[in-house]
Picture 1: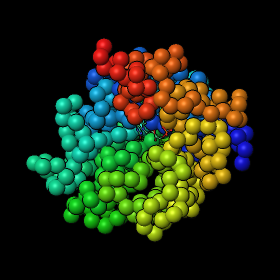
Picture 2: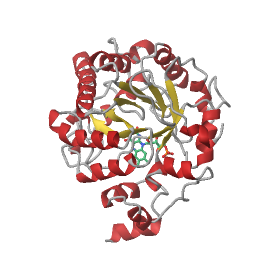
Picture 3: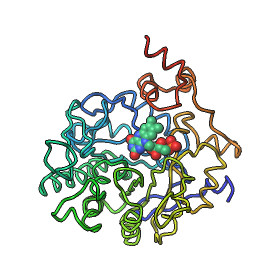
Picture 4: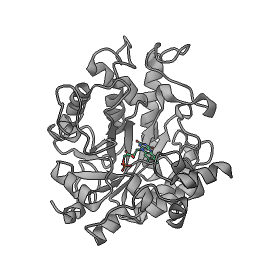
Length: 368
Ligand SMILES: Cc1cc2nc3c(=O)[nH]c(=O)nc-3n(C[C@H](O)[C@H](O)[C@H](O)COP(=O)(O)O)c2cc1C
């Protein structure tokens, strides 16, 4: 397929179609007010990307419970007090013609006590001295995801994207290493997938028929097993429980190194599943128009833009104007990001990412 195919619309099972194949990946940027309230910086960032030509914009990881926090200045959706700021964000995206989704997040065992987080492990064995969640506590967290989705709907978002990646709670529960429970949420693969499936089904029941549900999945670390994740994904796609699957690969060209899929691209392990009307996209080093178009040939329906979207807020418009568009080479200077309109808080956050802000700038920031 060619670059122009990236600008073909894409219908979803619920609600309006995506106007093209570009989705902004969820990007934590640690610029909210403490307590999770959207700040002027959050609003400014959303307005920038809303003007950038994306068909769908995901927010950063947003806490569904105060105790599920993982990052300082993380955005929250755990109370009605968050609605004002979130409503402004949703309105800006809609005004620019894009669809929107709040990424729903609970850090599980990785919640940070120094930020008010309450570590919530699936097993007694994960954190010394901290007991596993009781069945009732798991059900409470499930219900917090569902309540947060309802809030997202009230705020005017088109949907939610459920964070099931990177060892956070939903990913933690799927892992045989981190989940040794003996209740209905542990043991068999079916039981370990129960929490995420109940979250999805609860949101579907609670929100309106046009509300869109995405699910993000990662495949590495945290004891996750590829064969099991494929089985769980097969169930979710086969039953058309979601509108889109977002594969959180760090490199969309990743090759499986071991097990029954060894030698195949990680992407093909999932694109080869029957998916009915569910749409599938991946993130992972999509830095050029050419790579984005190639991924349609590799079986993706859409692509997720992460770091390339921080470098250039209107990545889709750049690709539209120039089918040979390539992102600036990394690292870039802080000044480059500043000139592009990124806030100091966001730039500071990016200093923590390897090879993004050039090291001379990092040294200067540290010594000032
Ligand atoms: C600054 C930054 C913040 C991120 N925040 C989140 C997040 O809040 N939630 C999430 O699921 N992934 C997050 N990710 C991962 C990205 O969504 C994306 O999957 C990853 O960066 C790979 O895509 P890329 O190569 O285009 O950057 C973040 C990545 C970066 C660079």
